[in-house]
Amino acid sequence: MPADAHRTKAAPDAGRAEPASPLTERQEARRRRILEACARLASRGGFDAVQMREVAESSQVALGTLYRYFPSKIHLLVATMQDQLEHLHATLRKKPPAGETAAERAAGTLMRAFRALQRDPLLADAMVRALTFADRSVSAEVEQVFRRTTAIVLDATDLTDPTPEQLSAVRVIGHTWHSTLITWLSGRASIEQVAVDIETVCRLIDLTAAPRVP
Image 1 (cartoon, one colour):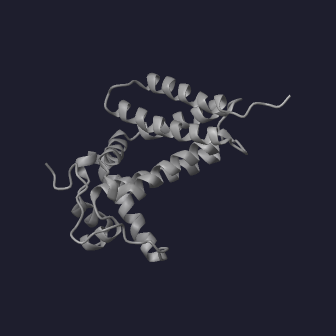
Image 2: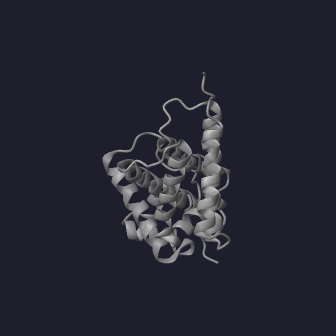
């Protein structure tokens, strides 16, 4: 089993990822190289192909520097997923979804996002496995992933003033989207079944809308 396997194995003395304060331009460029190297390795060989030493070599940073940014392989892959979702969100914003209802727009957007990840299944599997293996030490990074998913759904709905119930529905939809990704990657659901599940859960948005005043 690879040294970086299923548990969240951190470097000695590693706590959280390095920068709580804003990154300098040079630090941001270094972080970008690390994330890109991680995505390349995962695309080629999946979860087991992402080894911290190889990421460091590919991104041209010292191994100790890599661990200061990402204390473990799990931290790194979860951050990579958050980065991939950011890029995906930007792409989705360029072409707003069609649909007469908020539910239709949300479902359409999430299926577009799903198909984007489907095009690189090894990378998708590596990121989702990391999300599944993440323990409490990775909670901040995991929260960023789910916040980005929520933002993608909210943007798709085009709701200017969502009700508290709709916001709750959006969070449930995000969790369901991640769950369907897991079931598809594990071969337990077809893309057709995923589409049905996403369309079904997205109806919660319309069901939780505030009633219209006559």
